[in-house]
Length: 146
Image (cartoon, rainbow, N blue to C red; front, side, top):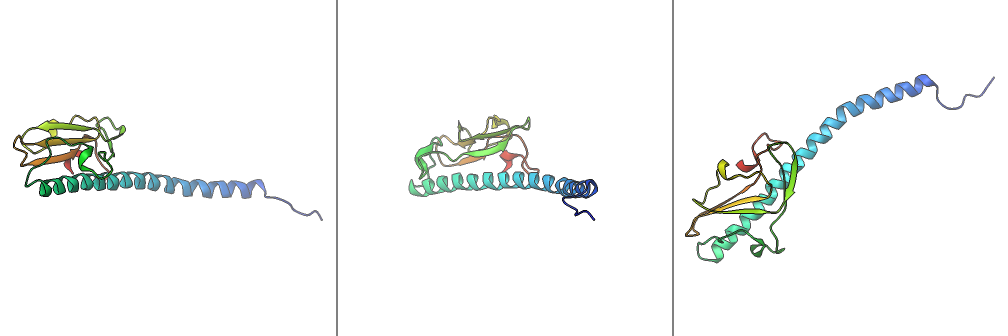
């Protein structure tokens, strides 16, 4: 009698098939989780920016800053946000498009270059900040709608 060593070709084929089936289910789930994480991070960064603006507003007697820059943040820079552009590419940016307008960002003011859009009234009493991307998040909303 010979001693059997190693695996047969059939056993290896079965293991490879099982691993393939598991990968078929795991990879799409992983990709979905990455998108959900990107959305959660972007919403958290937006919350950070809005909180800094609220603190500035309270500190300076009901006036918002005339432009959004790093001076109102503890780190000395505007937080970076990662979002999807209209063409589906992912852009990571901390750039800011500053607008002196009606204090409310609307879809026509979104330039889709990433980063932020900050719209403030001339008297600095009303302001709005949005993510500057026209793509959609994992929740199916446009980034600028948050």
